[in-house]
Image (cartoon, rainbow, N blue to C red; front, top):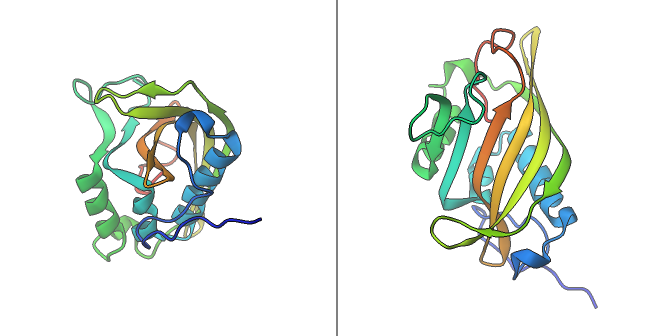
Length: 186
């Protein structure tokens, strides 16, 4: 007998089979979510991509010299909640993002996905910590840029599907000089 995942609104893409309990989530299910996220970013389907995130999500990119920085007290490159992330998506989708119009071609590669023990968030909500390595290639004009680092995710179950509550992109590069900036979503 085959079952299909329940239909979800376009803003909430189905990442895999239905999930009821984080302790039963497999690495394969998590990889499916992370690969879906990479595909949506590479295809510039940002309006769909943001549906992978919870309403109280966090997207953080710390500075290269302070990878363990706390955005509450330290300077970071990016510290977005859902509202700021939505504004970033809106800007990147428009001509106002002159650094990304026309859009760069990107290739998000995710590997070495590792699941940690389920833990409660500060709000008492069960979350699944996930660590993965990444390489993101960005091609713009005649130039190419490479971003290398580690993703630290915290996943939750929302309406029977895995969703991203937090994504922290820790760059492994000693300097941003070779890439000049972080104008794309890692």
